[in-house]
Length: 487
Ligand code: BG6
Image (cartoon, rainbow, N blue to C red):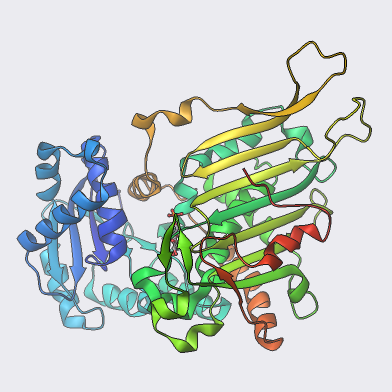
């Protein structure tokens, strides 16, 4: 079967937060750049009764809220809005799928892309019903949002059901961190520059830190979050994906499966964390009332109103180990949390210090660091020692920051992760999407931690909103005389 020129996108959960906040603005921006010509129609599905006109108005209103003003253009909006349609659908009702099939039927052959922006508990009924409705042919693709399942068992069950309907090469498991510009740049930084390759191992790297800090709380997602927690929401996917890209071996080529093979090897090399070491290697936290940027904010329990959520972590720190030839002896410190001091995500590669100091008064506690900042700014900085300028007889040293990336600051070249990823789905490129074995390997490692927390009754330690998490998290690297990189 030849691949149809045109695609139509069908979004389950079309009126949901993800669709309105991330997907529609990303699609609009692709349209604005002339990259959406092959997508002839976008069908948003939902249960709230709505017409095409009402849905377009809803997207318009949200776009005013979420899209930076300088991207707005009335003519582009009109062209984009003409593609938007709303179809009422109850995911469990086969009759509604028959109506959907009718609504999406086209004279010219089209490739159907189904985007499942719902809870993953609905993926099985959606795929079954799509299959029975006859809308899935050999070219049809499905995009699955994270978290995929709640643990390894549920994830595997969903994967098996989805694979009954779609072959693996048509399944796009999304992790939007892989669409971020600096994350993709990591591959180029590591494998395009001869400079770092020889140093990229435990002989030269003392430790690696991956931080994804947010200042927001759980907001309107309390219900989802109370059942999920930071380990499942962030570590199982985003942080482990970053770890894979930092730790993986050079792939033989840039084919999607070659890269994913290397990532899976890293995940399989992660030393399990279980009953014997969970207390020493992990810290769970939950935010209490405090202040963010000077404004008072409520604690997690008051915010969600669920007293029973006292066992949900909004913060995790982990000392992970990649148990292989390249990384033995180099700890990977991971931390993520909500309501922290400020929003920033970064990867810090801290190099080992030189064995002997030539300079009297050398601040030997200063090491070379490569800091890869993902957000809010996107940049790469090398921390190095310099001579302090001046005529002093004794050489004085100071740490300076060398900015390695002028181009990343070009605003016109800034694209949201979802733009990159949606484009890749339309082009059928799976490089930045997770393969089944990858997601399941992530769950396997994370399940070990969850089970250990449960068995040993490790409760989240409280931290004041506006700080960097429980003090135990600061102590995690300090146990081996290391510390978190702070700017
Ligand atoms: C999502 C999580 O996957 O990522 C959210 O479900 C989190 O809890 C979000 O806030 C963070 O994404 P970003 O791109 O804003 O760092």
